[in-house]
Image (cartoon, rainbow, N blue to C red; front, side, top):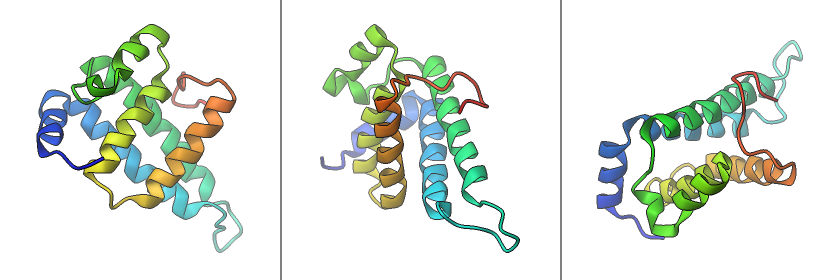
Length: 135
């Protein structure tokens, strides 16, 4: 998928809450990926707090989607109509993440972490994190 500056401009200008939440999600995914399997000096797990932040960012993106509504980007691949029908936030976020990846390919660790997380949630039938403390 090639980078389209028009899509980036439309995403930023028409859906500012979603765009900002998506940026935060990508950054938290990169951090969680970096911290995976790491222990602190005293043996504390560095991944757990990073993963908690990542889950909060997923939840915040779900809230931003509700505030902003339909996104211009995903009309290109019908994911908004599928989202409205099934209310599967994570499938919709995955479609947005693919568009975001084409615009900002410099976060490969974040996209790798998202892909793993998305596959796991789909295996378990999770559609949305219901609260900030969701597991």
